[in-house]
Length: 199
Image 1: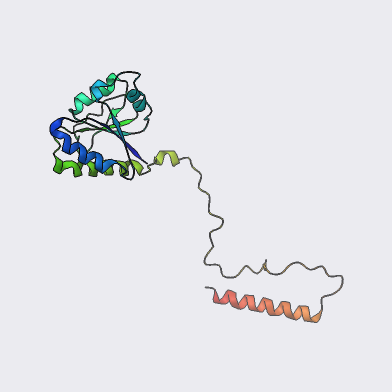
Image 2: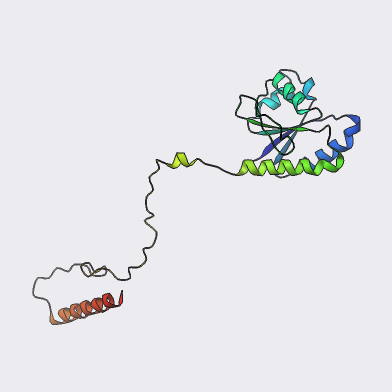
């Protein structure tokens, strides 16, 4: 699964180096899709940025140059709803929100250039956690388990005497020949010996 990452394209002057490092690390990074938008508090309803965000229906990470509370308010204002989900860089997220879409909010205000790697590492971790498929055991409770017919059966090396698999029934119009009786006797004797060995 890919993780969309939304980030304002303009950063405070003092944070330009951090923004440059983040964008450079995110562009083309496997599994992460960077979308640059206007400042979240400046996006208007019906704008290109608002419609771009509206098209994201999966869990998304939002990196912003404001506190997570201010970011949440900006997203709610443009009807970009979701459930604020805690992660390592936002452990105090309360899970507020009524939408099933998860929002991972990142406050970049306090992020120094040296901490850019921690943001990238957390984004990678979130993407990997979303890629793990989970299922409920309750959903399997009513499932009927059927044996695999192609699985070889072990422990039975010879067929039972009553149904030799390699002999097809032969229609005879007369009494069996002496050679046939001799071959049948040898076959029965061989099967008896094999049965005696199969303990």
